[in-house]
View 1 (cartoon, rainbow, N blue to C red):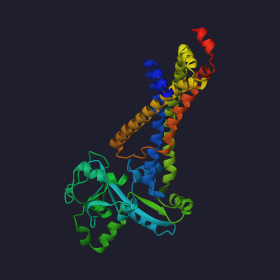
View 2 (cartoon, rainbow, N blue to C red):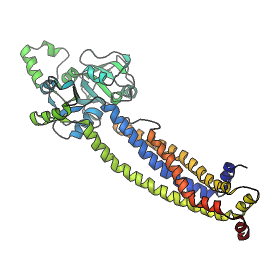
View 3 (cartoon, rainbow, N blue to C red):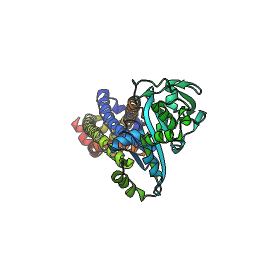
View 4 (cartoon, rainbow, N blue to C red):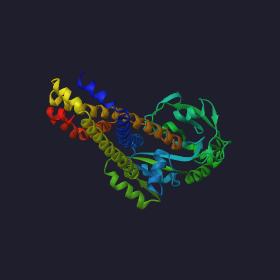
Length: 405
């Protein structure tokens, strides 16, 4: 019988003790893996939706609120800003691109976003069906929205006031679905995209074509009062990061928020919870290591006759010690597999809850590089717990083993 087989049988010769040690070690590893997976998936989601956005400009208020509402669409905006002021930003040489956005309505909880085709192009969105909008009151639905609502190209729908369920519908200004986006795993999946003019038309109370029929003076007056919710900014050079926000915050009625800075603050807040889970995992691993050590130490003391027999049959001391070590390694292997499976399952459940509550997808790497720390921790705990019992088994004297029986 080889060492691995013998160690496996020894491990399960005391099933309750082995099961207890396995559960303790697996729970500690699962807590550790949950933190690593959550951090990876949240950072992946932030990086995915923030890619290429250097600043967000909107009404003065909370910068974090502006980022969460304008980029991730999981918060309410800080207000509206004048369209003319946003257009003036595009004329600055330090700005490469300005993408204006208007919020305020929803389709069964999914936000209707008025913008330009540049917004969809920024995320590399592709059409799965239909075409892009070419006129006001035409809309393209994200993959998740189309699946949830069941709408298909050519159908009409009405938006409801507000960014959540319960608002009054704008039944006199229906949209026409002209396209559906392919799933991109980004924020566009849960949005309804349309032209800026669509949002203005709904809230200005004008009938289709009525704006064009007005006199030039009336059109100018209406355009002068038009507003947008915010604008996504892409810099022309890295130097703009030091000048542009200060210029907007001090010389205009708007504010400029840095996504990188605000996301760092969000991750810092999230880190408080992850440190708590990490502490719990560390305690469980410590308890598991102590429990494994006691179990192996008792096993060595109880198996004196077995060890004496192995030595009499010609097994060298290193083989006797290897049996004890392999017993701990079997436990580490089982706990590592179970801990990773639990961490993946808990992360998937949490992601589903988050998706249901906020609509924000946080799917990321199934096995990020830092997850190798979980089996590494299992191996380390096993080696530390088994160190003294292995040395004791290795140094045991045959004569002493036989006389102690």
